[in-house]
Amino acid sequence: MTLAIHDTLSGEKRPFTPRDPSRVTMYVCGPTVYNFAHIGNARPVVVFDTLFRLLRQTYGEGAVIYARNITDVDDKINQAAIDQGVPISVITDRFTDAYHADMDALGALRPTIEPRATAHIDAMLAMIGRLIENKAAYAAEGHVLFDTQAFPDYGKLSGRSIDDMIAGARVEVAPYKRHPADFVLWKPSKPGEPEWPSAWGAGRPGWHLECSAMVETTLGLPIDIHGGGHDLIFPHHENEIAQSRCADHAPVYANYWMHNGFLTMDAEKMSKSLGNVLLVHDLIKQVPGEAIRWALLSAHYRAPLDWTGDLLVQSRKSLDGLYGALQDANTLLGENDYDPEVWDQPQVAAKLTAIRDALEDDLNTPRAIAGLFELSKALRALLNDAGEREALNQIGLYRDALVAAGSLLGFLQVDPETWFQGGADDDLKTKVEALLQARIEARKAKDWPTADRIRDELNALNVVVMDNPEGATWRLADSAG
Ligand code: AMP
Ligand code: ZN
Image (cartoon, rainbow, N blue to C red; front, top):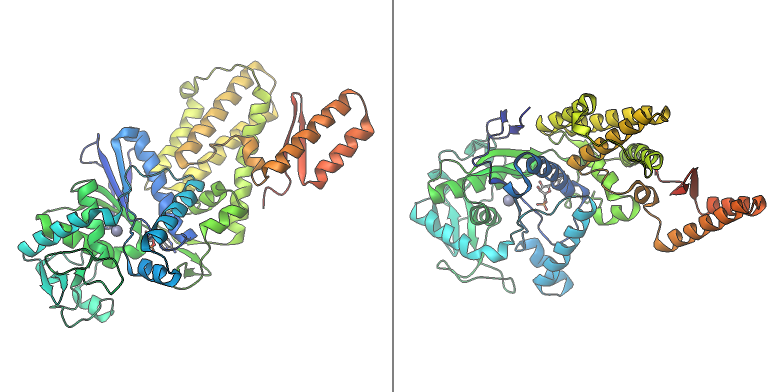
């Protein structure tokens, strides 16, 4: 199968053909760094990370260029700096670092390029110059505005007519606009806000222009894939298309447009303005990032995803099941050799192909996750009647296949031990290891009362001990939530 993507612009699922298979380009709108990211903001990150992984596997790691910007000039950033009485860079640096740490914890690979808006002001000014020259923009009262009347395709992405936009009051009316739908490319800064000199007066760029300029500078037009949340279709992406196409007389800005659905709580979109947010920063202190990633990928990316506590508990339990099978396989295989020619085994290969096919079918992660369960079920069945040399080979093959398939989705990449002990701090780990060692000594000396007492002590620490022929492994008892 080959990758097919639902493209918002055509409204169809289309086979994916990159412009140049040795240089596949993807741009995803990144965070405005004035606050911690909430779990809704993490949805596009995890979704497009999964696509990034799939593209890398298809075209080669070096062949995929993924750019995700940092918006570090914005009214909300300015306000946060004023509120906290610190320079703007203190806010943007702090929340860029936090964003990286949080998204790393969700297993998201860093993008290839992470352009910051403030480092591309020259490109934005040059673009404004070309837009004015091409009669698609005009200066008025210290502002420069995009002239929506100059672009007949305006509204094609969102399927809105300009009249709809006005009726829906989605546009800001201002006296200096020729048409209510015209939007800002450049505007004067308020006192104390960052500003840059320009031919149209000192000021700062509009948000939409930032992405257009960064797409052009970092990737070049047209790009293959442009992504973001559903809320960005209008006006943000509509405006990006208008600017970029008019500045360069370009017939196409992005060949495929992908938008993830909203993450909701109690059927309402999670958003900072509604105040119903769960921060990734807080959540990763309570549950492993991998369980959050699992929850985020448990629904198809275009469907809404309702966030509940139960979803997270179930996600963690699912991962417990898969890691449990891996752990048992590791214990059984131990130092044993097995024949690793996994790709030659038709049954394993078919299961792996099914997972890849699911992802290639417009990133169908629920189906891919079902495929992981299939692999793990097969591995579990083999473990249940292990013993034969033949079975050891099979177990090795299925274990490796499960880890390989997991990596495509960003799962199962830590040691099972680490997974089960996740949440235990270093002090606890040291203590448990010492108790386990003492228990081994006691058992060797046939000192059963001491061995039992140590087991009680471990239980009191919420630790479950699993004995096996090579010794013992342990896990935290409440790992499933
Ligand atoms: P923002 O910082 O609000 O510009 O959002 C950053 C990214 O998160 C954008 O791609 C948004 O579309 C996306 N996003 C924001 N809220 C949600 C949500 N509740 N569900 C899914 N995606 C969201
Ligand atoms: Zn953008």
